Image (tube, rainbow, N blue to C red; front, side, top):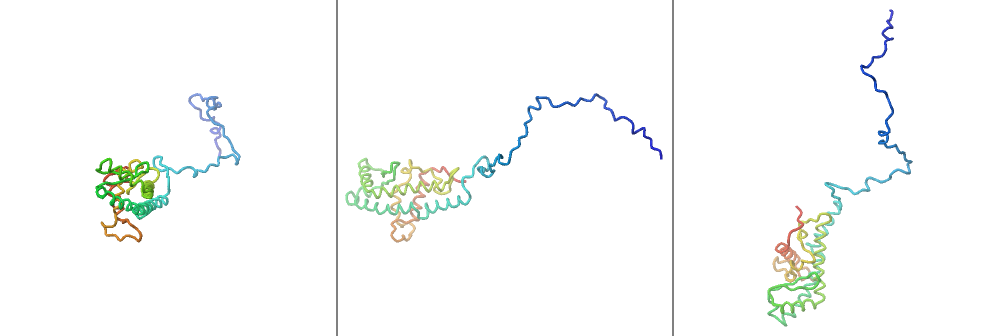
Length: 240
């Protein structure tokens, strides 16, 4: 069979318009392109991705692990509600409170029977409150503060309360469903907590048997503290 080669000899298909000449990139375009840079293995950035802080949500840095949160919460609750440092300091304080009240009942029985309270102010001194005259307040404060052991243990109660309520709230955004939800500080502690009331929790309300050597009832002590906070302190750190 004979093949017609004339078709193969035809010229390539032509464009209707002129073809734009090919030219190298102009200087402005080439100046915007960064030159590839090659590093030897020893010059590469060795920063590990996981060395950076882990962030969740909208820029909130994780400040403790779940295990740390559980341990912190359990430690705080044990100290505050289950007979920790605060209650032990209060129980020791009760012995010296009894000494002061015993002497006051001998020297001024009428004053001893009046309705008054005391707490620890921001300087660590025992401050008397109640519907009393200035002379009566001065007398009571002199007797209370002259007992060094009473002052010592009263401050330990206050310090432990502030320490463990802060622990209960936790780092980051502080929050709590327990006593830590209340706004109690070194400055306003004396306006909220009446320590004389705590000293009189001797187990009569719940009929709790006191542990050997203890003067205070733990359950009544915890109830009393909770009621004082509820009635006089502002809720500022409540966890929803």
